[in-house]
Image (tube, rainbow, N blue to C red; front, side, top):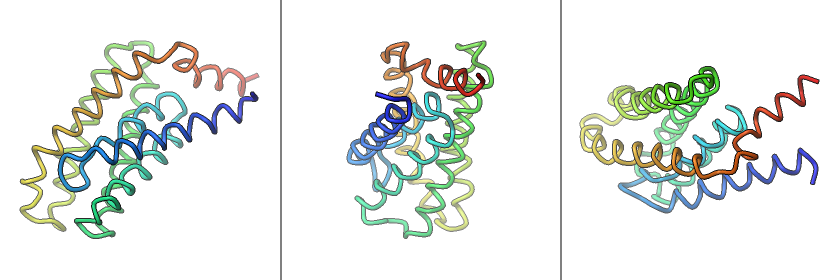
Length: 171
């Protein structure tokens, strides 16, 4: 199997996992759909991570009937893309310090995905953001926990995929 086929297969697997997670709901469109996006951005890069994040949230919202309207869910999906990008950027930028990069990326991802997102959505959703705080906190922490557990269980061949890919492009 060539390198491009492996990459397409991994992307398809991450999207499939995201769809599966989108079916595990906590409240409305709040689900376990983003952990494949977090893993994707670490392994395959931020471009793939944000694609999986956007797709995962939109599937989750669609399965819920777009409870906050399509435009709001497009905003939420975009915010999720930013969250995943920053998470992956921190993980890759500070990979020399794996424990520190994990802690910082998790904390920053939580801050972006919960208080910052709810603050940005407040003008559109009003007081409902206060109702969303607890389930969104639980879902975000669950998605980040799943990310770390699944990533830790991956074989080193997959964990090092992005490094191998960068080395191949550099030569």
